[in-house]
Amino acid sequence: MKTIKAIALILAVMLVSAESFAQVYLGATYGVTDSNYIGDEDDPADFEGDTGMRIYLGNSVSKTFSFEVAYIDLGDYEVGTADGLDDVDEDSDTLSLSAYEVSYVAKWPMRRNLSLYGRFGGIYWEGVRKITLVNQTSREITTDRFGASLGFGVNYKIFKRFGLTLEFNGYQIYDRFNAFYGLGLYGTF
Image (tube, rainbow, N blue to C red):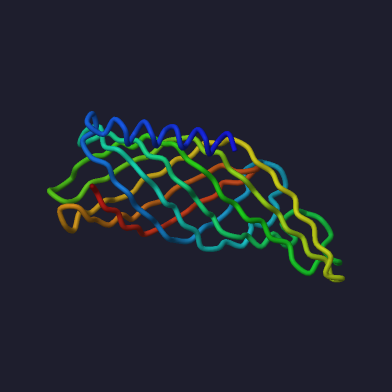
């Protein structure tokens, strides 16, 4: 709940003081996710990926700098035997990941309508693991923490207030690097 209040406060500041900002934009990205184990120990199997989405609101302070707030849904990973536990009695074992992100974005114009960008920020993520046993009993384990995010992409402006993005974002959640590759649309106002 504290995170939602913090994001609401940031959004209010961004929208109330719109005179001091060059441009407000809203966008959404849809794509695929992948999760890989981080560490030198015995490498457990990778989680089976899913589809995900990222919905964001940003403010461009200049042509080369902006900041964003976003909601990220990394989908449901099939955990299976990747956790190293004996899964004989399990019917299903899934992990749903979502996060809220605040990030800074640096842009590098390449041509008139084409630019590259990099993103660095922080996330507040929540993981909900649902284990269903063969006898149909289930339990949920919820974990939430802060983490870091990093991303980069290509932005192509199609019309004056509308464009496309092709992006990669990475999030460290648990002891795994969670990658999100997506294609998105954005509009400015």
